Image 1 (cartoon, one colour):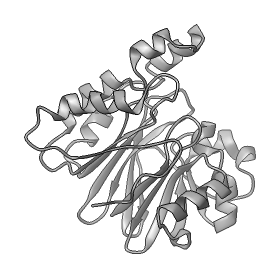
Image 2: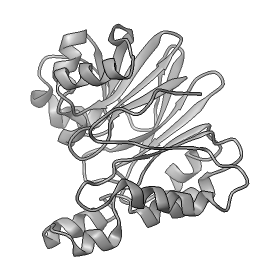
Image 3: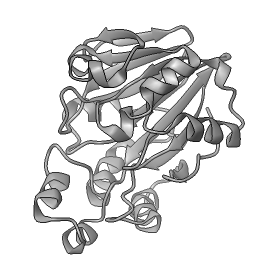
Image 4: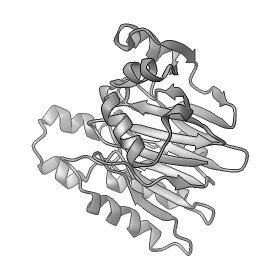
Length: 255
């Protein structure tokens, strides 16, 4: 399995996953022009994409799904409830719906879906599996639920939200209601909350850790990295650490 975060943050998210010449995309908040630009920068071949899966209906995750699906003739996969809320927004696409908790089969790649904790109709997190490798994807979480925590254990790679530094959020420019929304159980994980979860998710087999959905206003890549490294410093085994960006793709990570 190989994967790449083409973009990660409140202005657009898109994750590429590939195995045996077949690729799928989880979310796309990028324009087609920007998506193709970043895929090209990462050395990815867009003709390999057959499917795009949507985690939830916020604009930074779904805004570019319809145009990309039409451009590349992709099948769009969404939960039934999310699709009902977004039918007109997506436009004309080939749509397949599923229920949260289902495992989606994409040939050499499967996606286990699980209920998230975010202020949308039906948010989901994922565990991506191939024959021998596994990748967890957990962003846009107000809280690390027991369900998600259990499913993120003992994986080969993990994409985990380190959204905000609590002091920067509280002292920052957001209005009070938005600060409360970010901090709520339907908001986003702070550096401290993500680091606490990481303490029990890191293990000798964890090879890759990606810090994702870092706020441009209420966090910095350096603070997110410090929070993660404060946990990893106590571990005998340290995974490779990548900090995802809003503005450029990560390296293609091979498992």
